[in-house]
Amino acid sequence: MSAVVLFSGGQDSTTCLAWAQARWSNVQCVAIDYGQRHIIELDCARKVATAAGVNLAIVPCDSLRALGGSSLTGTLTVPSGVPAAGIIPNTFVPGRNLMFLTIAAAFAFQRGITELVTGVCQTDFSGYPDCRADTMTALQAALRAGMDSPFTIHTPLMFLTKAQSVLLMRELGRLDLLALTHTCYNGKIPPCGICPACLLRAKGFAEAGLADPLIAASLGPAEPPAAPSR
Ligand code: ZN
Image: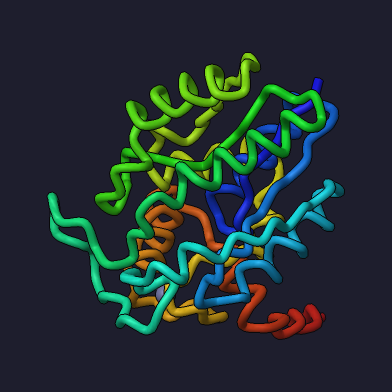
């Protein structure tokens, strides 16, 4: 059995990749080069895919950048702190998940694959309407009808908190992969620590009671332990 993971090199899609590898023998990743402000995302996607031993296809799709209006595709300032409830922040890229899942479905269709996996999550979501379960249900119906193929969109993180997502990765035994991921909206490694994405990630690890392997990896190797005294 095969599956296609919509992949970004971030924490959530990397967790989805590990989840998919525990279920299907042939897992392939699709990442989209959409003119994202931080090309570091695609570098991380390549590193994670290599470490996980999966094929990664990077598909160009630059129309979202041309449309503008989002701080993740243009020069708008990324807001600091957690966004207020009910307000869609300027990090929202309208249509992104709809387009990307359609591209992933087309990629899967060409290879006879029907299982699609995405890391959307409405529990901790930043006010993004395209991360909600009802959007995914509607999109799955549209993809099935539009390509006449029995697609299933799997959303293993949909109702998990970030802490539960971290614990899921530990259960899957692949926390190591998270050292290679990228989350920061400001494109920083080590993470900036003040953007909404960094805050959410840090909160998840803190609540899970685990250290973020990305922090340790990005700060360089730790001092070797002192030789035991006799
Ligand atoms: Zn950040």
